[in-house]
View 1 (cartoon, rainbow, N blue to C red):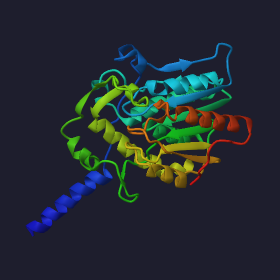
View 2: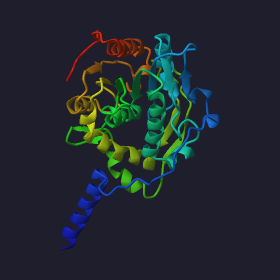
View 3: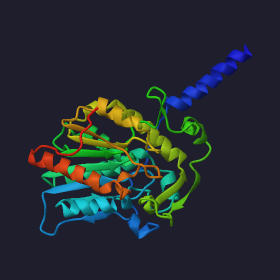
View 4: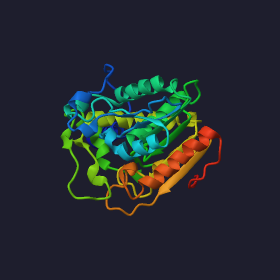
Length: 318
C-alpha cells in the first residue's frame, strides 16, 4: 500500500511540474521601462525616426533576458531602408536582476502590446520583428491582432519558441525546466547578475549584454505563456517570415516546424540558417556572419508585402 502511495505521489509531482496544471500567474501592476537605471547605455531603447515623417515602421522586440542592443545592426539597416524603427526596452530588463525577478511574462507582453497599438495607427505599414522570447511575443501579437483593424502588415520571428521542452516533439532543451515549478516555491532566481559582454571576439556573440543566471519564477511565467501561444497559432493570418538556425543551442529548431504547421499566415515563408560558428547560434541578427543576409531577406520580404511584388529571398516552406 505504501508503495502505491509513493508511486502516486511521485507521478503527481512529475505531472504537476511538467504540465503546469493548475498554474496561475500572479497578477501584477502595469510596468514601465526604467531607461534612467540601465547598467549600460547600450541597454536603452532604440528609436530612429525620419525627420520628414514616414508611412512605414518596424517594431523590434528583444528576448529574455536580453536588451535592445541585440538589434543595433538591424535597426540601422532598417532605418537606412526608409523605415522608422522602434526597439523598446522591456520592463525589468537592462537595469538590475532584482527588477526582473518579481515580474511576469504577462506584464512584459501587456507593455509591448500597448506599445504596438500606439504605433499601429500612426503608420500605413507596420512590421513586427522578434528574437527568441521577442519572437514568441511577435506570434502572440499576430494571434491577437491579425483579424482586427489593428493587424500588423508583416511579422518576422527569429528563433522563436512555442515550447522549450516537448517530449511529443522529441526536443528537450533542459530537463531542469521540469522541476522549475518546485524550485520556484523556494526562490525566485539562482545565480543572477549582469552580463556586460566578453573580451574575446566570436562572431558578434561577445557583444551580447543582459542578465545572467536563472530567473525561475519569471521564466516559469514565460513557459506557461508558451502553451497558449502554441495553441493559438492558427489565429495568425498575417504574412509571416520565420527564421531559425538548425543547430540553435538555446531554443530547439523543432519550433520552426511546429510554427509552420500551426499558422495560417498568407504568405508564410520559412528560412533555415546553417551556421558553423562556435556559439549558441541563437541571437541571429547580432552575428556578422549571417546578419547581412538575414536583413536583406527580411527587408525584401517587407517590401514585397508593402508593394505587392514577389518575394525574392530564400524560401524553404515546411
